[in-house]
Length: 547
Ligand SMILES: *[C@@H]1O[C@H](CO)[C@@H](O)[C@H](O)[C@H]1NC(C)=O
Ligand SMILES: *[C@@H]1O[C@H](CO)[C@@H](O)[C@H](O)[C@H]1NC(C)=O
Ligand SMILES: *[C@@H]1O[C@H](CO)[C@@H](O)[C@H](O)[C@H]1NC(C)=O
Ligand SMILES: *[C@@H]1O[C@H](CO)[C@@H](O)[C@H](O)[C@H]1NC(C)=O
Ligand SMILES: *[C@@H]1O[C@H](CO)[C@@H](O)[C@H](O)[C@H]1NC(C)=O
Ligand SMILES: [Zn+2]
Image (cartoon, rainbow, N blue to C red):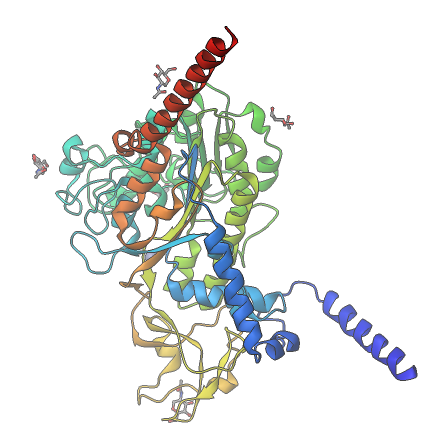
């Protein structure tokens, strides 16, 4: 009896200890080894069979949704490679004191997954500009160009401004169907990925007239992204624009909300022009308090610019000023969902990419978790019967996940193995290239001994095998996940530019319009016809019988 009581106290103490652990950043906390119960269970045959049977039953019982997608949300993880997803899910689980390897990011529960081939017209390895044209416009173009086909070479503004070469995005198709549209990003709203929603640019650098001039071109001939967002066809109809980038919209000499000078050379204040050009209720905001205080029911147009250029990484953000990707997604949906015809929303998690470019894998993974939270918010706020959610990446990165670490080992830390050549430790995550090279290798080619380095510091730059000023993108396929109407189309090995065609088909807009009216719509019409005939004939029969 005494032994039993001690046992109960012991278990109670353990439970108390586990529950008292608040959230700490991975750099400051000591990740515990994988919890014992799951590791014991994994030794049993029955665990794996039950696990597999349960997953199989879920697949068998799932019915296909061939309804019309009233709403479409595209979540773009910039640079969200498959390695980033695998490492990200492990970090998520480890931060929750669970076995990371069995953890899942929100979108890993989606029923459909495919692979997207990301090459562009002129490059094996793509950038965020030409890929935006593919996954938003349905056409592949040249490296660094946006919203234009492969007939437009870099910096050829004449061709980019020629409508025959322009590629319309799915936002334009949705607008033609009288749907509401919006974009959310944590980079500048004029940056390459969001610019794919509304612009046609011969060079992604053309974010403002100042930047056009800086590149050596004439702003009168190369209309910049900020101007296109405020005054051109698709941009001016966007109901929601949330992200960073005040500098691109304000004249030099005008200070923004944060005290930073605008950069425009044409003297125009595009933020006030944006507000004045709207016929509905339009509001421009600059911090998280204003975002939360927004009366969504009485706002038709919302522009929130929360930083002079890109917003901060999650790890550096001033949470009193800058909203999270999740908060911006929530605000966007609250405004867009008021439209009876539905909406199209584009959400970019832009800093997965920027962190990778610096070899800062920890920050890239934390941004991945932020991205996953925003997707969970969208799932919670919408109905999967009528809302198609697609999650994908524009391109990969060079981060690898390697070595033979023991199960449960801290994904951010040193591998449990050492190099069998120089006998030095190495991290489980590493890069093919990037700026970290000189921090890890001597001129004599010797490797830095990582046992004396805090690899769990969020600024730590993981080793790269050759030097480059910024780490480059990767060329292998990225994943596409889908949930909701017609999600089962998003499987197989896909060209990246089929993605908007499938979203449009599901939603019956744009190019999907002609196809989606048959045969499915026709077959359901046939069902109605047959039922009507059956009801009428049984009525007639009853009448005759009664006579
Ligand atoms: C390429 O662009 C030019 C204009 O810049 C246009 O005249 C020409 O027709 C285009 N060619 C094709 C094949 O679309
Ligand atoms: C969109 O709305 C306009 C104005 O109300 C209307 O004329 C048009 O037919 C609508 N288009 C579609 C596709 O519903
Ligand atoms: C803004 O104007 C000031 C001088 O008034 C100049 O020094 C600065 O370089 C300008 N900034 C940009 C981005 O053009
Ligand atoms: C906004 O409108 C919805 C639907 O009409 C209503 O349920 C909600 O309470 C309103 N919210 C506010 C803050 O007025
Ligand atoms: C460079 O090599 C020396 C020995 O020659 C070693 O002591 C030092 O730690 C090395 N530094 C790095 C960055 O590898
Ligand atoms: Zn990039």
